Image (cartoon, rainbow, N blue to C red; front, side):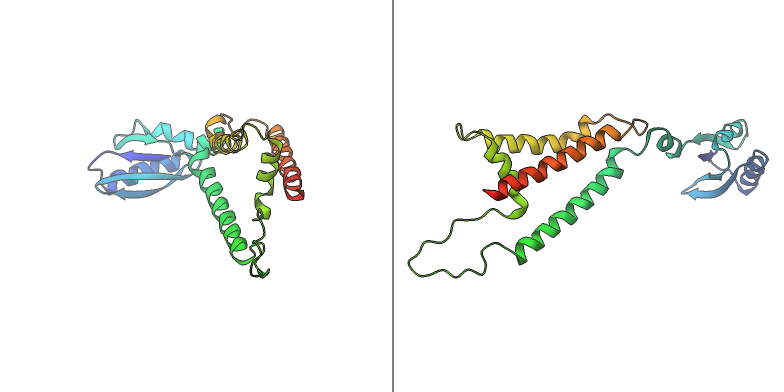
Length: 193
């Protein structure tokens, strides 16, 4: 909680509000933001801060995100989005490192007059190749369109997920594990052919 004091409140008013807070079982830190003085409630039951509103020096009480986080859980943006983005960047960095230092077919020497070997799919794209092999060959646009649709669905998951922190996560974890197993199976199917 933030206790916003009236404009022009001096040290005496701050001390009076801090004394009233102490009588309510609260503790706080006085802060100055530009010309505005405020007190950040640092300990105690923050609901008791409502009793400070009748004080003449108190202008308003502003709740911080703590009660909302305890009630609803952390929102996807920015908390989980930042973690997911950081993990994605680390994964992309690892893939670039592997593709740069361990590309397929580097050690093979080409003989003059012979055609080069056909390009090979990298190991990390084997699940996508497995998905493409499951798609029918005619019409040819179905497989790539399915991959684009799947990528769009993955990127749209935060918009589709309306769950709060109070819902059970067991079914979601089971679905996630099934998706990982399906990805591994597709990887083996794509890598075998």
